[in-house]
Amino acid sequence: MPELPEVEVKRKLIERTCAGKTVTAVEAPPSRVLRNVTRASLRRGLVGRKLVAARRRAKFVLIEVGGGSTLLIHFGMTGDAVFVDGAREFPPYWKARFVFADGGSIFYTDPRMFGRIALYPTLDQGGIPDLAGLGPEPLERSFTFARFGAALRSRNTTVHQALMDQRLIAGIGNIYSDEITWQARVLPYRKTLDLDDGELRLLYEKMKWTLRRAVALDAELDRRKDSFLIPHRGKGGRCPNGHPLESRTIGGRTSWYCPVEQE
Image (cartoon, rainbow, N blue to C red; front, top):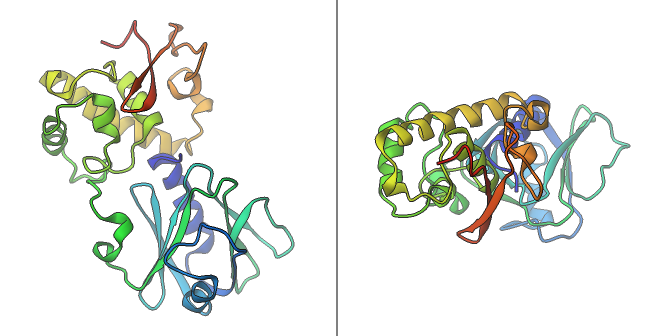
């Protein structure tokens, strides 16, 4: 499932290609990705309106629509945003198409249809049910070490599960939790209450660094296999320093780690 860095990259694409443009047509073949909205009401809510800006909240992209509504996109496991500068090209597995006055289109594609598109008549995030209960954004300046430490100390759980808990920290999933714990050299199955202050501080700093660096690399971490664990996750994988990886099921999810370098 796309996590914070991947979703931020998609948000930047939408912002760069669509912000300030007026929607002239909306197409959406029948599918289960439309939530709280029908194809007809999606067209009524968007056609003739300008897409003002694209923001991200956790793993959601929130597009501000002129007139005061929010187009919400969640990419599920396989969703993507594809911009096409012309009317003739249709990417595979498209589930929604938003056409602009200049002839370009932004497509929402989703082979497995675990994502969703919704339209809410508000710009207030507090009025959007999908966002209810989400914790703070890890890259915001207001998410200080004190807040991070308090969040992790509030749960007697594993580090892996705490980082993935969307009520504590918004946007991190299974894959980036593995990356953050490797960068901090902390075993993912360690209990949060067993971390000393130095380990907790390093985990906080590596969380910020990992997410920022991944966004800067457009979430294409294969470009830096020497620095990141993610390209090596899986059976037979080795950490960037050459040690064999091991896996463990933690909270129902498979976590990969280096038993040599993580403690």
